[in-house]
Length: 89
Ligand SMILES: [Zn+2]
Image 1 (cartoon, rainbow, N blue to C red):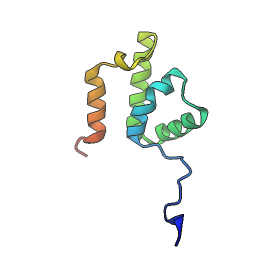
Image 2 (tube, protein in one colour; image 1 turned 120 degrees about the vertical axis):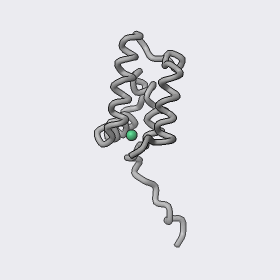
Image 3 (cartoon, rainbow, N blue to C red; image 1 turned 90 degrees about the vertical axis):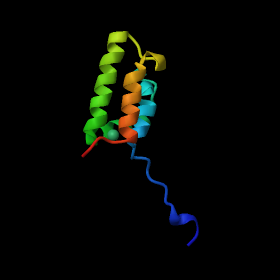
Image 4 (tube, rainbow, N blue to C red; image 1 turned 30 degrees about the vertical axis):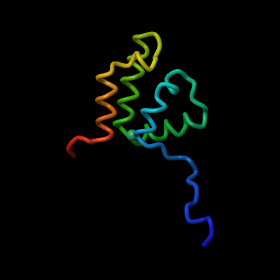
């Protein structure tokens, strides 16, 4: 056994925390194509994130742009908290 014990993933998995981190770039169209596809794959499989993205997109549209500080702190915190500490199942 050499260095192959941790085969690199193909990079096809985005987890929910990563979605939060890259959402602004995604909505601004600044996300590289490859990252965008990974994100969209995740959204197709994760209703929670799909809804989150839909909300953020709606908000970005209403604001005419999305900036880090344009996201209401409450919402951002709530979302981050939800991912850190999932509600009861
Ligand atoms: Zn997700």
